[in-house]
Image: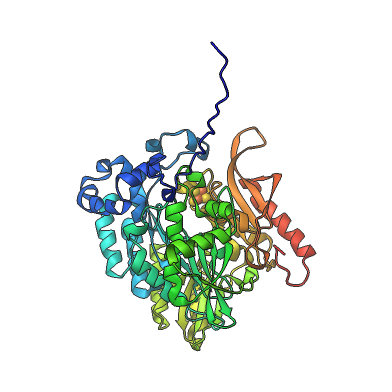
Length: 547
Ligand code: SF4
C-alpha cells in the first residue's frame, strides 16, 4: 500500500455551533433537546399530564432537560456519597422529588408574597426554603403532583418560576436597597420590571447556548457582584447626561473564572431593556453551542474582545451607537452587604439580618412576616449575600424589631463569621455535589464564634460543594471548593481546596489556589482560626482581608 500523502486541502476549522454562522444542526444532546421542543412548553405537560400521572409519567427529556425552564430540577437521591456521583447513571442519582426555584428579580417581596412563600414551604416542601445568592427562594422535596397548586398560589401574588433555571435569562439581581438608599445613584427597578415584562418567558430568548445572568444596580456599593454576571448594568454618573449605567459583559466563575469587562458604554435607565436584549441576542446568535463547558458568554467575550462585542451589538442589533461613559468607582468589598440598621432616604430605616448561609424555613418566614407587619412595614428584600432586609421601619420601632429578629436567630449585629459565610446547596440535595456544605458552614460559624468572640474584621468564607462555584469560591477571602480527600488513616473524607485572598470591588480578583492548600472538613475551624488570627495580628487600621 503506498504511503499516505499529506492532504493538500486545508482542514476545515470546526465551528463552535454558532447559529449566526449557520450551525443550526444540534451538536450535542442538550442542543437536540432544545431543538426538539421549547422548554417553555413543558409547563402545559406538567399541568395536564405529569401532575396527574406522577413522577413515573414524566418523559426523560423533560425530566432532565425542559423542567428547568420552570425552575424544577430533580434533587439528589438521599444517601449517595459524593465520590460516586460521576459513576452513576442519572436515574440512580435522581430522586423523585424536585428542587424548585422561585424567581424574585431584584429580591423584593411584599408581605403577601412572603406569606405565600412561607405557606408553600410548610405545605409542600417539608419546611425547606433557602435564600440563594441569586435572590431566589429555593425549595426542596417538591412533588410533581403539587405543582399546579404551587403555581396557583405563587401567581396569585405575582410570583413566577419561569426561566428560574435552564438555558435562559435567569433571575436578575437588583440592589436590595433600590429606591430607598440615601447614597443611590439611581433606582434600576423600572428596568428590571420592563425586562421581565417584555422578555422573560418569551420564545425570543428561551433557547440560549447556556444560562444567562443579569444584574442591575444603581447603588455605588455595587451590591450585586456585577463582576460575575453575563451582563451587568452598574450605576454611574455621566458628567453630561447624569445618572445611568455602565455596561459590563462576560463575567462568570466555575472552572474558568473571568471578571466581567466594561464595554465603555453609558446607558440611561429607559434604554436598559433594549441594550439588555442586544447583549442577549449576540449571545443567542454567536454563543458557542458545541461544548457546554465553552458555552457561557464569557468565552465569546474573551475571544472577541469588548471592542468587537460592542461593535456587533451596535451594528447588528441596536442599529445605533451607544454613548461612551465613565467607569464607576469600585467600592470596598466590605461595603457591599446591608447588614445592620440603616437610615432610608425617606426618614424610615431598614434592618439587614443574616440567616445562617441563607437557610430559613416556612415557619420562620411566617414569623418574620408577622414581625414585619407588627412594625407597620409591607416590604422585605433578599440579597445576593443570602441575607434578608426589612424595609420601612419607623425609627422608634427599630430596636424592638432588632431584638425580635435576634430571638429568631436572625441577628442584625452578627459576628463576622455569621455575616460573611455563604454556602451553596451541597450534597444534601445537589446532584453535582461532592461534599456537605450548609450544615457544615453552620457548625463552623458556631465554633469560630465560640473560639474568637472578639474577631470583628470583615471576612468572607464561601463553601462550595464542587468546582461549579455557585457560592463564588474564587472571590471570597477564604474560598472553599469541595473535594474528596484521603484522611490520616487512608480513608476517603470530605475536604476543600482553598482559594485564598479573592475579592470584588476595589480588590476584585480571584483567590490564590495554592497547590497543597487543602483542608479536611474536620480541620476547617482550625484552619480558618489560624488564617484569621494571623490576619488580625498583621492588620493595619481597618484594612480589609483582600487588601
Ligand atoms: Fe451544587 Fe456544586 Fe453548585 Fe454547590 S457549587 S450547588 S455542589 S453545583
